Image (cartoon, rainbow, N blue to C red; front, top):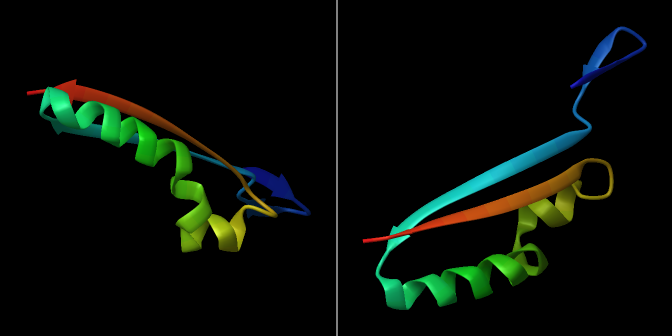
Length: 61
């Protein structure tokens, strides 16, 4: 958050995805993560004014 004219404003959002799954699903999760922005309504709605970054951490069960 940053202040703009005394008002707090969101400038950046970083999302950490932490997933658990089978070894076979790790590649699928990475592929989906790489393209999910194109179909995400929240990203499409606010990406023009707020910088959004994501990170995927996968843990095999």
